[in-house]
Length: 114
Image (cartoon, rainbow, N blue to C red):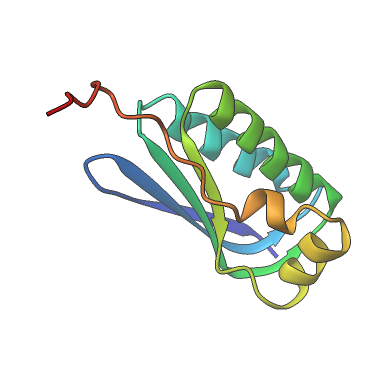
């Protein structure tokens, strides 16, 4: 099965909707999509796995690499809506809580004290 990745943007965030199977043959597409979003200057990236039917260790690696790069750029990163086999894989590998914990970019301007 092929992998399809679409995106939806707001003023400060992007959601990647991932459908299909993330495996050795398709993980590079996910890497590329995440890198493209991180290059836009978005404050937050969500990777929506609601349409994903399978996730191999190559998919886990793509997600972890994306998270690492997002943290380095101070971009919030979260995997959302994982169900079925992808959720089970995230849980069994112990990365579920790491990838589904909301992390936020610090405010762009300091908040002035009253």
